[in-house]
Image (tube, rainbow, N blue to C red; front, side, top):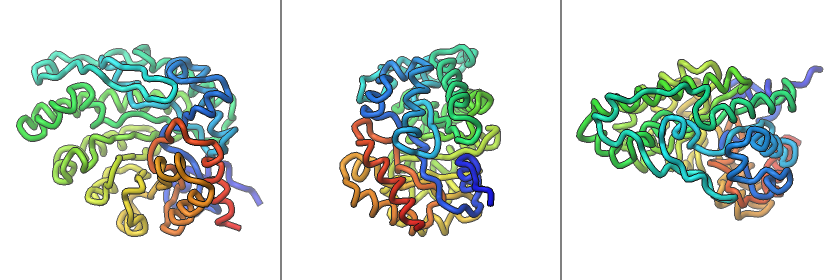
Length: 340
């Protein structure tokens, strides 16, 4: 009998096909301080250096046991390449956007997309993906992570302008979304060309915490759907917060997987609602289980997620930098025990 490779297992799961064992990966960021120390690839250096980036990404697979390699670690790579100013953070704090190039609608009229192949940290990310593929071989899946087009648009114009335009200037909002999406699609396909098997977009600005469910339906989902249609790999959509109110629309965005946090309490209901359109990815709590829990708490969360029917077992959001490796290992061990 031929066993499925890790890559086959993940791709089948995302396609809604039967698998022997639900894959255990992180579609969101995987860099932790323990892993940084283990392979001498600390932030912020490994946010920019291709070899360190690859070393840290592979550590989450080889040391912690996650069944995919996810690269890079933040939601600012494309924003920086497109002209945002970035604070690169610290060893245990992510980079963040601190200045926005297109805060007024008229600025967008003159906006031009740079050559993404050479802009900012994109060459380092592309090089890191190639290094990962060379080192892990063809059978381990690589997940390319990035900011989603809605979040990129809000980074380019500022969240304040984005919110204001969503109410007062829908034309400017649509223009920002289209400009951001063109770049997001190109960047995603550069990652796929380099060797990424799956693209995960984190789009926190799409959350009901910031944009109303009606706005998501009317003004955002078209952009995300276009992204999923034009990217040459399966797309996982991650939206932070309690997305119960927009799950039905998220499932219509043509993304293969929907990554949800523990704030979505009825995961079984979510699985049933989205069946045939998208599969559920998640939703072991990053802050309350993986970061601050113990083996017992991790096992309980894993069993709940698997009982609820998630197709891919994963942290509900980015793994917190101070998360103990033991708890990530416990997540995989609990999944294995579930099938014994």
